[in-house]
Length: 452
Image (cartoon, rainbow, N blue to C red; front, side, top):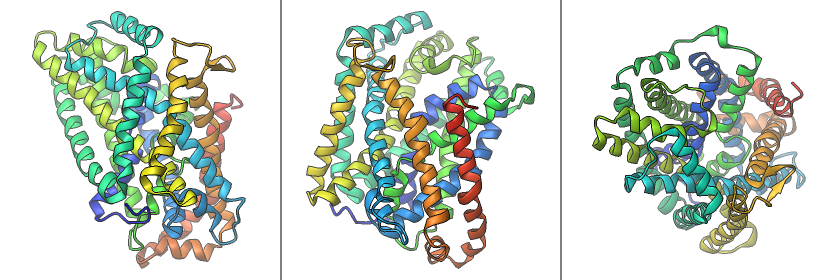
């Protein structure tokens, strides 16, 4: 129950931290963004962005978290040459995690609801029926509130037991099951007649589809998928031991994260092409388009269609859970250390704050549309604020702290740790953190603001 305990094994460390990155961004967002941006060419650019932006920023958060062994606010404030003002960077990350968890639980609740529908064999049979069902779910019932809170309480139970007995232990089961479901669903989808067109769409680049927006969307997806700028990775790194190879860990997490996204594409696009559904179906792909796709694709094998639907929605529930655990832990670690409360009490504070955000976010989807800000429902507003402002600013300031404020000798020592062979990679890391990553992040911010 000690908040400063470390992960007990290398596997537990990698699976838990990878679970922090793997989430709905890999299964839901990656698929529809890839579909809207031409397929394979987007995937290639996305992978390049992960290498140039994702891994260096991830290593940067690891350095901050592991070197200080504290919650995000305290970790930033205690860095050499930093001060309490830099602790505000960590505070922004904690705030961002709380805000995202608040509306993320609504989406995760939808996933949980659809899993229940799949188990009851009550998934709508066509896209039109799915659209009407999804609209009715949000506009005329309290189910989104209930399911969102249920999902949050499930997350709470795991986090309250601490790093070793809660997060690490559960991640050792969740991640292998998630990968197993991915492989089974991929085989089933790719075996459908006409599925090869979906595989070709994902792996055969059409460079004529590439434009400036493709690069911007790939940058944004890499940023979103790896959970950069919300201090989840920094918090998890505070539980790393000093012998952890940060570069190897970052590479393993980036590979796992990207693999999950591509495997999800190998489920969704082959199934969509097999029944003639366009890949650019947008954000409604998972909740509106795919239920009809699965029903049509396996219409001659209704039992298989039932199994595939259950497995798919179980998959996205598990992916959502690995992410909500990490976001909850950011706030729980902060409240544990700054209030001196026990971990269970701090976890309850985090859960109650999140409920206060989750309820109006769920109601703003239709039942109480008055919960709106600047013409957007509350969920969309918080999503926009966190994705367009909080996360990029947090990542940009993190790069500034490590690249320009903290002495290079200190960063080098923490980066190398007990792995002398990493010294050769230090100069490229500093160049990326000082110049390349900030430029990429600023480009994403300007594009989201409509200034580019």
